[in-house]
Image 1 (cartoon, rainbow, N blue to C red):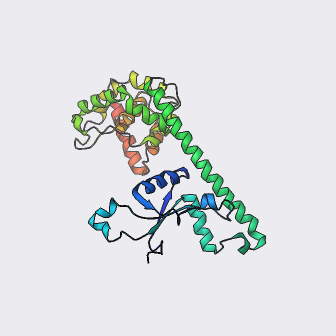
Image 2: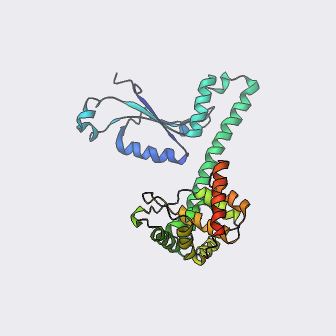
Image 3: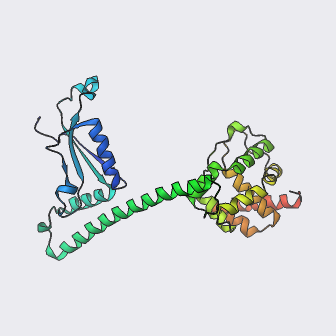
Length: 295
């Protein structure tokens, strides 16, 4: 039994190819690696027909077997396979089709197999490139916004960074809670619906963080007044996030220049699909307009 190295097997699947090596470092740190029986098929079989992964044969190290739950497995070796999700997709489909080498494959489709394997490898590298770009973009945009260089386009990265660091957003939310009698401890400093917010910002032709910052600053006193007048009975037990600031900012803009179409678009962008619910909100809004409250 000591000569059998794969009585137990574990497969770790990563989203990105470069995470394979990161996990390998963790395994080398946490387990005793049998180098003789371990194999990096990415290196040893570069011309292999298909797409390979990294295989480790390991056992529990001396520190681990000191614990009672591991001591009975001191001599047991097991295998850990690490591969990206696209490597895994190839391996599973290849296994299902039943072909292990190109000599087994009918020559009529041999080129197709090679082309698909190449496409998956290219896709793996492209996803990794995109991930690295987004990581760098997030760092650059975060620095810009923290330095108040706000003339950047609105996307999920820039919006989340702005909301997390903006003093005017926090100021408006605190004033809103005070206006409608919600304890500040109920504030959760989080933006729950960034995708919907971006859609609505674009529909109001707000394309940069600088534009958004100016709009919020211009209305920082009016938004709390509006929510108190329009919706003073918000559940005081609810957790309140930054979305409340933006929803009421949009309501305030529509209140000043009412358009049923724009209000409907706003509600649909916030995933309100029920037609009757939309009609009820429009009806409530029209009734509120008739009160002609100066805001």
